[in-house]
Image 1 (tube, rainbow, N blue to C red):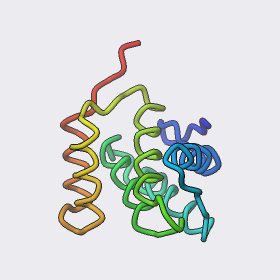
Image 2: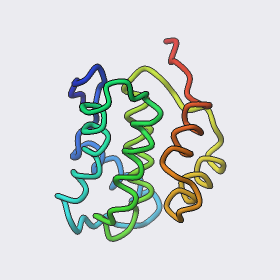
Image 3: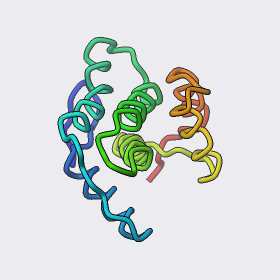
Image 4: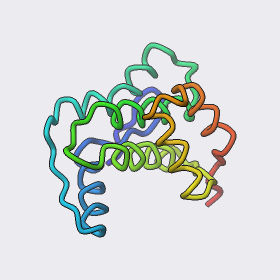
Length: 135
């Protein structure tokens, strides 16, 4: 799952799709991928930003990754879940973790998709709650 570039470790599309599918199965749903290119473009949005904005922080890139996946509707259902899995995986792959409650995170992610938060607002929320993994 690790592809290092620009100083960050990046998740790949297959791994995120597999995790999303497994998660949805636990809820009795089946993941249907409508547009793989759109999914990959959403995942790559953060990587492109890192190339053009080398000063971009982990929190901002995670927010871009979430937004890129959650708003493209590449999946029939589960776009927000896939975006959350991708962004949290990205944070974890880069030796950090997001210390928030599941309910609070869900509310923030839904607010982003509804247009109530900007990507920058979500990045600020992530930044305030990301901590280094001390293992």
